[in-house]
Length: 107
Length: 130
Image (tube, rainbow over all chains, first blue to last red; front, side):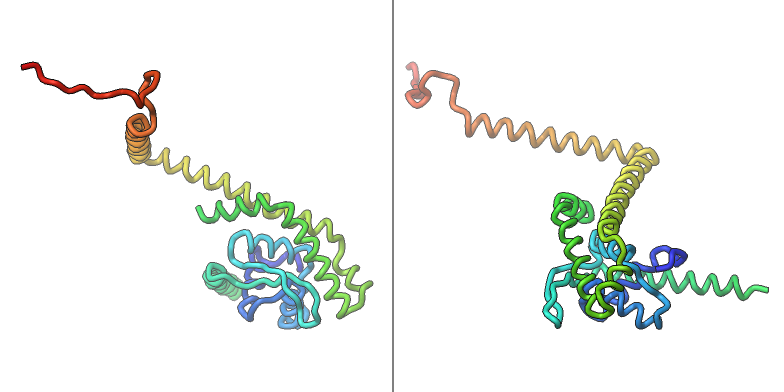
């Protein structure tokens, strides 16, 4: 992911993606890439630290499982705490976006 | 508090976690290789060991920072309201002291044998002098 995204945004995107159900890291990255029409390319180098961080905070839970193609992968799911955090973060993000828009519309 | 219990567990399991993370990245690479071929997958993935190191540093750093923040927050609150803090400290002191004393007495009365050679042979002699 580009370094110039607002801080905390990647965590929020990952949490949001996981509202679709549990998913492994690769699927999370792929889904964000697809939905953003390939604009947001999440690098493994920032995805895995983010997943570790989210798990450490108790917002997601990971467990080993197998994919549809019978490959081993670690699947993550959102915890109730994670859901709450996502709500808080998306409100914070919307406020921030509106504020920036207001400043940019100033003439 | 729950946060710190979780963090402590995380820290204790750090070696197993590092191993799990390495496996997880290998699994990621395998999935990506199915989609785009091994060479492209490896190129885009980059250095897996470095990613693992970064992840580890990331949470270790956030742990240290949060611990420091909690300590500073506590210290600031104590300084801001020393009366409240000393009442809290005093009531803890009294509570601990009372518990220790009662335990000491109960321990002595119930568990200790009397300081004589064979206490089971002791008898109580009660009499009256008329």
